[in-house]
Length: 311
Image (cartoon, one colour):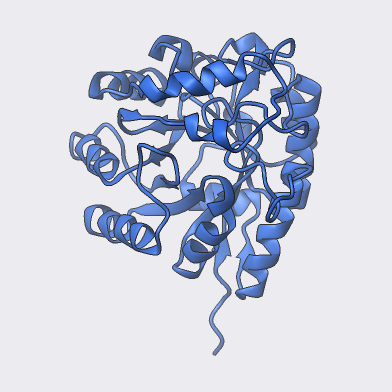
């Protein structure tokens, strides 16, 4: 008897707050652009949409809930996708600023960074000559001396503030220590499975992009969490497709989107988030895998359902 085809959750990160200054004209900035990009990505096959907001005047990341309010209901009405709101925001924000959208809107999923780290984006200065906004070169240069603060106290605060409304978390792990931090909170009973673990590769200050790095993170997560987690992977920049392809072949789920990479092939800017979803979908289907629908993703992650959110 033939085995059923494995379902893969595709997450699409629509517009970045941390990873991606707006160095591409295709990165959505306004609420209308974010809504349109998110809806198109969902139609292309993304079961989860990871959402940041930006100031429409200058493109800066913002965690003001009023910046999220115009696009959340529109995306919800147009798609059945799971909406995942960031608590990462930007390293320049306080933890109180960062958690406000998840606190107000009680989404099905919120991202949660699992440890402090150096967050070096300054190498981008050597790769780009044109920026969409004047603040971006200085922002990148300052990351030579930036620590993205996510202390145990910060993490516990977000878990306690947002966990009571039924929101579950996408635990973003940029290095091996972050997996151990997550195990600490699991052992204390502050989180429970199935844990949705997003391992992040290719950010300077975190783990690298060698295949051994991917294998190491997977082995560590297997040892710490056994069968009680759902593994997903993202690769920064040009590493997006190789890393996600490797992870999918190893039994993982994948994340793409313009937050993580502006590219859709060597030297070619992606014209939309949906273009990256379609590309990874071809890869997954070529591996004999199927794309999970939003209801299937909700079942795999034990989510509360889209009717239980505050938007």
